[in-house]
Image 1 (cartoon, rainbow, N blue to C red):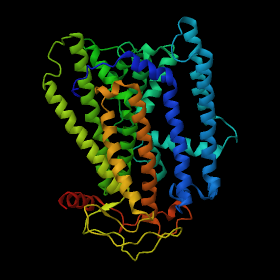
Image 2 (image 1 turned 120 degrees about the vertical axis):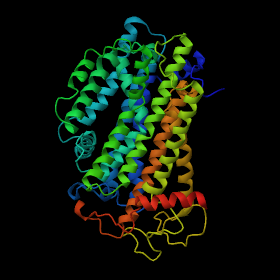
Image 3 (image 1 turned 180 degrees about the vertical axis):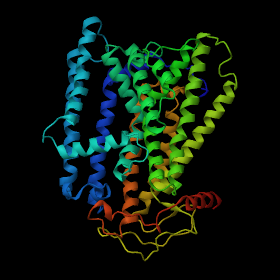
Image 4 (image 1 turned 30 degrees about the horizontal axis):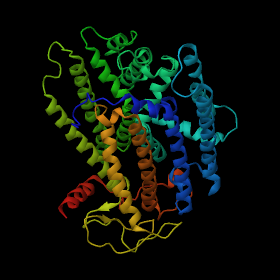
Amino acid sequence: MDPSNPTTTVPDDTLSTFRALLPFYYRPLIILTIGIWGWALNLHILITLGIDAPALLQVPLAERAGGVAFYRPVYVIAAVVSVVAGVNLWCFWAVFGGASGATGEEEVTRTWLPLFCYLTVVMMVMMPGNVFYKKERTRFLRSLSRILSLDLFSEVYFSDVILADILTSFAKVLGDLYTTVCALVVGRGSVEYLLDDDGNQCWRDLMVPLMTRWVEHLRDGVLGGEKGRGGVERGMEAGRRPAGLPRRTKRGTRQLAELGLIPSLLRFRQCISEYATGNYKNQRHLFNALKYASALPVIVLSAMQKSRGGRQQEHVVIEGGEDAWIGDVGLFRLWLFFVFINSIYSFYWDVVIDWNLIISPSYNPVPLDSPTSPRSKHTKSTQRSSALRFRTPLHFTEPSVYYLAVVIDFCLRTTWSLKLSSHLYIAQLEGSIFLMETLEVVRRWIWVFFRLESEWVRKGHVSIGGTRGEYEADNEYALDVEDGVHTFLAWFSV
């Protein structure tokens, strides 16, 4: 099968089988629940292995609880959400017969069950009063509000960076969540509504006004003034399509929102804020922002290929030669090039920068006889000459764990970049979409371990039991851009 052909279809029985097993309405919630369980395991395992996760995440000293007391609330929250989702899904199967066979009033009635499930979870997070682990819920909401801030000069906390990176892995899940809520509220739970590319009322009546208001707010906050306000207000007019704009263009534009570009934009904003608040000196943040921006060409070119495939399938001819600047084969090769760039760039940044793991033979930021962390004894084995040279010290005592993490990260980084491309055949298989979304959550779960391990080793020789003011980066250990470039070149020259 030619992967550049976006018009390949999938048999209906393949789709209906997975829909019956796991209705679309519940998939985002199930993956989000898996993510909560994963975060609880992150905290549990890190604390067990001697890494003070609450201190690294800059939890106020008054709110910290040692050991079991810190991660137990996350386990309880994950368990409660699992019970709510499980009972609701069982009722959906047992009472309403699953995701098929309902029509008319019965179809409208059964959509309230998954909608009630989502509302219950939202109420659990937002409920007032000192109940159901208020401190944990408040801490999460505060971090989320800082991430959603459009202030380019706001301080970026390490805990916010971790949460924002986690949200980028849930980007497609959040897009599916939006589509699901739209189907339940506007489309009355119709599966056909979920698959409809052109008649999405929720996109027209909800998402267009929301995004244009967000752009307007961003423009006012960054540029100020009234420039461009007229165009924004015109875009607010019921999401109407401008005259002469092909319907397929709207489809490709909506794909950007469905594929969850917003989390990457929020993380991009954080990188710019870190650069601005650091007196515009640390260029590493600009290179980090470029990493998140590298996903944009992949998404845009994929949307263009999907749009072209739809027009070819329907024998639609667009006047003016839209996208005539490049042929189909050239477009596919250009997309493949940016997929490669995004995958390698992201993988390199994970391993060399975020984990501070792989270094060049001439760079060893921490000597072998350096002090150990206050909570554990780091590995001090002598590095052997190889293509992959790990930093010292390593907190985890088994080096094979690091090698395995690098291999898994590379494999899943590559598949996730392909997942950004909706025109591929695999994107039409509902089961494969759910599997790849789950694997990306697993990859991020592994990433959190080594990201916090790296931060612990980097700051482990400093007392980190107090306030946030005691957290100062060790410039002798921090890997700057120049060292990263040398590492990258040395890596491929060995």
